[in-house]
Amino acid sequence: MVYEYEAKTEKEAIEKAAMELGLERDQFDVEILETQKNSLFKKGFVKIRVHVEDGVKTASSNTSYAQTKRTANPVPQGEFEEKLTSFIKDVVEKMGYDVKVDVMFREDKKIGIKMESSSSSILIGRKGKNLDALQLLLNVYAGKLGHEDVRVILDTENYRIRREESLVRLAYTTADKVRSSKNSILLEPMNPFERRLIHTTLNDIPDVETKSEGDGLYKQVRVFYKGLY
Image 1: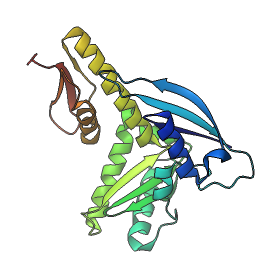
Image 2 (image 1 turned 90 degrees about the vertical axis):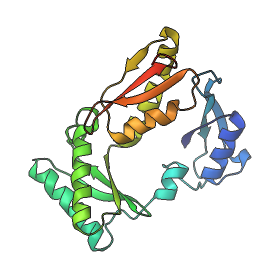
Image 3 (image 1 turned 60 degrees about the horizontal axis):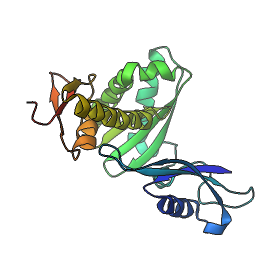
Image 4 (image 1 turned 60 degrees about the vertical axis):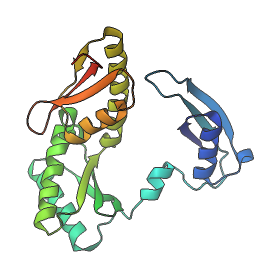
């Protein structure tokens, strides 16, 4: 079986693999896939591929450590979860799309709901706007059920994770361009979570600052050379 891990150094990546797989170092082979040195705008990392012989029992077969910790019984538990999953299933089916709804994870004051559908790309929409709208509806419904303090995360096809990784790359690439041109770049409209991710990613980058512009839910982040404004 093959697994991939990423960390700041090769040693940390191997230790991470051993911990997550629950194996000793001599129970798997390591292949270095990619090495990125530290630079002004990009943090260094090492990506490895771990090969485990068939028959060797690991702590996780298909999920990362973070995912394993959040693994939940996908079947809705209790009235609240049953109503949440039934609500979003009814909404999507009334839109004309097939969907299977499960619980993705449970945390304190937070629950993840996962949709599986042959029309996932439509449910996600451009830049995730359809998914955001469905998530907003689900959170409003949760509030009406008396759970205003619970945040509901709605996802499909792991879009949230893929989008987050894409935005981090965008932030660093934009910072490189801004520092080179000593000018500013206005990014696409984003929801509050996405904007916060851009701000946080670039918060400690010297010579670069960020600010949100616009009105409404979807504002734009301007990345600019420090001292420009």
